[in-house]
Image 1 (cartoon, one colour):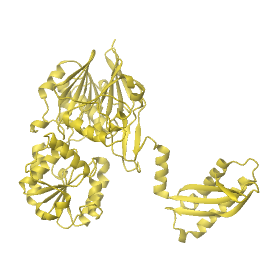
Image 2: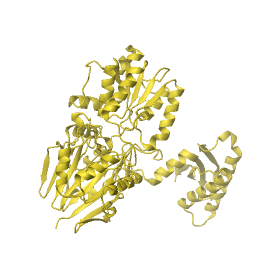
Image 3: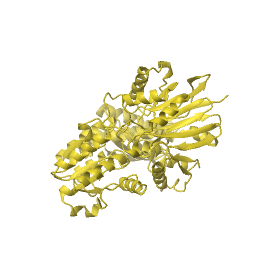
Image 4: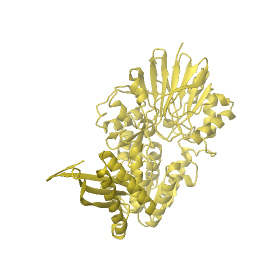
Length: 560
């Protein structure tokens, strides 16, 4: 009897880091390998990737990694895995080109070359399992849904998708292919939920293009466009609008330059005018009414780059009077406060702000009607809403019930759930290691909750350092404790507080020296406890307390 398990390793009850494993007997097929950019409370963290312990423990079973599209939430975690494990990676031409770009930038994965280009007509035979694909409409060409055909039925993963009847041929969904998939048994549908809670119909890309053209035609000064670098469709619309309004485009981010060059090379982007792109060093030769600056920041949100422009900290652009800042991507809900702050900074600098969302609802993810159409075309036995926070997954579940999917056939998974197929039914049958792996600089997974807690405390209440020198043999303090504060209190106005802290440290250290069972660990902890209690009583704050205890013996000293 065929064993079928669906293992959710990322992408649920969260935004980003999509990763889902389909286990069929002794083979594992991984759908997407994404990352997410950190929220504000993850201080100093560059990116977050899924925990891959389950895959590493079963690495001999991993038949391949299948990528739905080229955005960071689908391919961004690859460099941290394929550098250690030579697993075949499959994706469309542009998706693989962008995946190569990611892996080449990481020292551990730059020698990885086990990439395989497939398209919507490909079908890969893995014995009892066949993996095939179908084209979907998203904001980047080469987006594919993934079909894993097993002896007990098909498992379908949509990736990011929406339906747009007016989409360019490069972005069109193959409705006939979807209907054909739905003719055979679909055991489970893992479907995009990112836009499930929105009651609005999504604007077509033709309407969005018209809106961008109108904004470019009617503004007489310089235009700074903020977009996500990997939104190839939006980049094309900006290029077209710039050409129509007789403007030139300056690319100011490293990521957008690399992605645009890659897309141009593969003919997924078209320059409406061969001279439309201008380097940053030649930007000053253009009049304001001739200039469009395309700013993406890093591949995530471009808002921080706009803030640097507004505060004259950007390396090549400063927002001035008469500038129009046009935000043509829809920031995530988590960025709403940042968006409001960014707008305020731009207006203070003399600029004007317009967002694409002012006039229409824009998203690369399916509306309620799109999600229901996908269900009706595929007729799945079970639906697993994925790619979204819990409220979005729950909204998708309600949408599914409206078109006849029974409530007990909709499973809202948690991170790490193993959902097994047994006797014609899907049920949660176990759990796998799952969670967040923090990437900070070159460190992978070496930042945990304790480090993040300390960073949070440092950011909120600062640090206090107590330095004291002792002679343990003579059981006495050699010099009075010295107290230093950073980010806690202003030293010049808090001399009495710091003097009392010195007294507390001296008393605590002396008590430990007088104790017959002297212990360095206990001594430092006692200093922390006594200072922490006193400082909280006096200030209602809890700084990080760092005791530095040094021991002298005759004329030598050593740090303990």
